[in-house]
Each structure stands twice: as structure tokens, then as C-alpha cells.
Image (cartoon, rainbow, N blue to C red; front, side, top):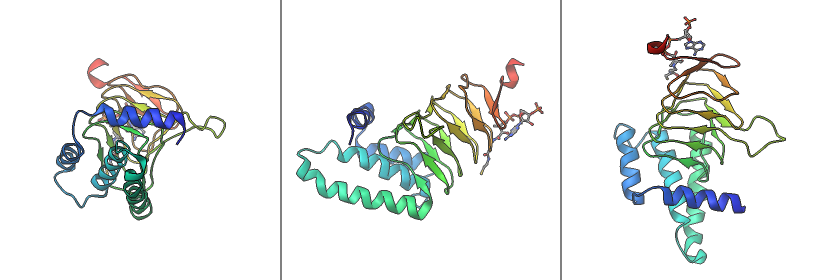
Length: 189
Ligand SMILES: CC(C)(COP(=O)(O)OP(=O)(O)OC[C@H]1O[C@@H](n2cnc3c(N)ncnc32)[C@H](O)[C@@H]1OP(=O)(O)O)[C@@H](O)C(=O)NCCC(=O)NCCS
């Protein structure tokens, strides 16, 4: 793990005031109390991946890391959800449905965001592989949307289905189309 990954996972793990069990319970409630939902399982494995990094010494952690790697691959290969533990994931994030969901390891997803099938939060070019989107709280990402590069999406923003977002989106605004255009919320127009 690179130093950046280390600091990210520490930030991610220490950010939650909840125990692993409490986090998973909250995620389960957010996913309509259905433990069979792929989205819930993906988030639970992500929480476990972060929690096991807090186990010391490394030798004790080794079997947990092996288990995490197996579960991560099962989620990725079985459900088509790539959610590395280094992604900073807020509380109660919902992954609706499954399939073709790719989340960058350096992406940040705020509390109460919704991610749907076919969503990519990734880098824009191979020249800048570490650039990744940052979502505020309560961002609603439509099916098939692609958010590329170091874009910041403000709290409560909505990203339309199939949008390709290349620029920042202010809080509570909409972004739709290819490339995505930002629209003010209805109440403000
Ligand atoms: C973006 C979204 C949240 C906007 O909903 P809204 O607040 O009700 O806004 P409106 O429907 O009034 O749309 C505003 C404008 O954006 C356009 N628009 C809405 N969604 C769009 C989309 N996905 N792509 C392109 N344009 C879109 C509308 O045509 C409208 O344009 P107009 O003002 O020229 O008529 C919604 O359309 C959307 O895409 N939701 C995704 C939901 C989803 O993924 N569902 C799958 C469930 S499995």
C-alpha cells in the first residue's frame, strides 16, 4: 500500500464513530433491511476491509486480509461492483442494483449518497490516474452516469441517468447530458 493509500484508509477508518457492527447495521437499514442485496454486501465488505486495517500486529491481520481479498473479488466478479476499501465511503451510502459499477480507490462518497447500476466514478485520463471524483452528502447518481477526474459534486446534487460529468456540480443542482450541463434546481429557476 502506498503512503497515500495508508493515509486514506486511516482517514476512512477513523472517520466513523461507529463500530464495524454498528456501521454494517446502519448500511443494512439503508438497504431496506435486505442482507441479500448486492449493494449491501459490497458496502459491508468495504467496511470490513477498512476495519481489518486497524488490527495490529500485521501478522494477526493477515488472515483477515486474505478473507477481505477473497470477498472483494467475489463482489467484483459476481455482482460487478468494484468498491475498493481505500475509497472514502460515508455513512448509509446506498448502492441500488448492481452491475458495471466502478468506483476509484481515491474517490470520496459522502453520507447518504445513492449510486446506481452502471455508474463509474473514475479517472479521466491515464496520464492522471489518481484523479477521482468527490461527492458531498446526499448526492443522487442516476443509472449509467460517468463522473470522471477530479470533479467535486456538492451536497444534495443529482446526476442524471447516463450523464458524463467532467466539471464540478454545485450543491443541490442537477447535471444532465453528455457532456453534462449543470441546471439550477426547479425552485430556483
Ligand atoms: C436528473 C433527474 C434526477 C432530474 O429529475 P428532475 O429534478 O425531476 O428534473 P426534470 O425531469 O425536470 O429535468 C430537468 C431537465 O433535464 C432533462 N433531463 C432529465 N434527466 C435527464 C437525463 N438523464 N439526461 C438528459 N436530460 C435529462 C429534462 O428533460 C429537463 O430538460 P428541459 O428543462 O429542457 O425540459 C432525473 O431525470 C434522472 O435522470 N434520474 C435518474 C434516476 C435513475 O437513474 N433511475 C433508474 C432507477 S433503476
